[in-house]
Amino acid sequence: LVLNVDSDTEIDSDVVSKLVRKMQDPAVGAAMGQLKASNRNDSWLTRLIDMEYWLACNEERAAQTRFGAVMCCCGPCAMYRRSALLLLLEQYETQFFRGKPSDFGEDRHLTILMLKAGFRTEYVPDAIAATVVPDTLLPYLRQQLRWARSTYRDTLLGLHLLPGLDRYLTLDVVGQNLGPLLLAISSIAALAQLALTGTVPWWTGLTIVAMTLIRCSVAALRAGELRFLGFS
Image 1 (tube, rainbow, N blue to C red):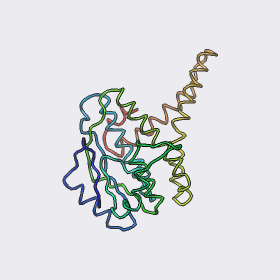
Image 2: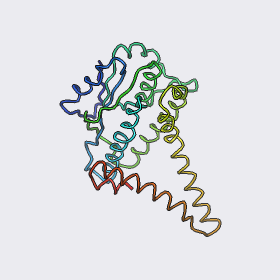
Image 3: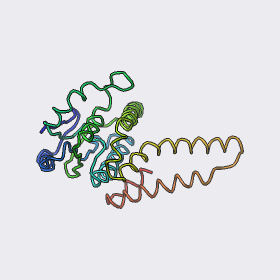
Image 4: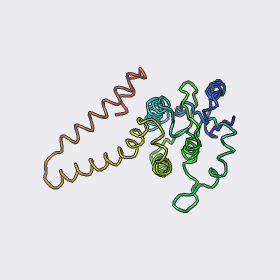
């Protein structure tokens, strides 16, 4: 087994044993732990990112593993089966996208290769890793741009996998890719309505607010922490 840990990440003392326990199933090619922000208290942004990580791990990844395939085993803390890595190494080292070498989103790309090779990927919520997150807006936006490029690229590469996976995962992938675009279009349309007609787009605003509050309320209830209401 091969453990990948980012240089700015610290893992709990029992992370290795918990990931190894999951990897005892030979059908599992990769498993990731739960990520937290080690510098959570540095700024308002790091507090928000820490909550974002909780949502990504304990909603998105937890649901995906329930249906048989985590779509991205995150780089800061993930374990891989060495025999599977050797099978995929050439593909992994020679990533191309639209005919050009690609060196971003390597964790998502490797996860997709694992799934294409027929292995399962898993999330282990009690294997805790704390990683340093951006504490100012510009580095955060650069990071998010890299991750978004990786998401859209590897969604295209992995589309043919979806018919062989649980239907929930198709719904999840479609939501991840279309959700931000629909939100952007809704916001632009609302601003256009306000500018061109002078009328307030109440329904658009209320719908976005309601969806946000519902999601954050569920997270606050599940985590048992009121701070998630502030994530709204």
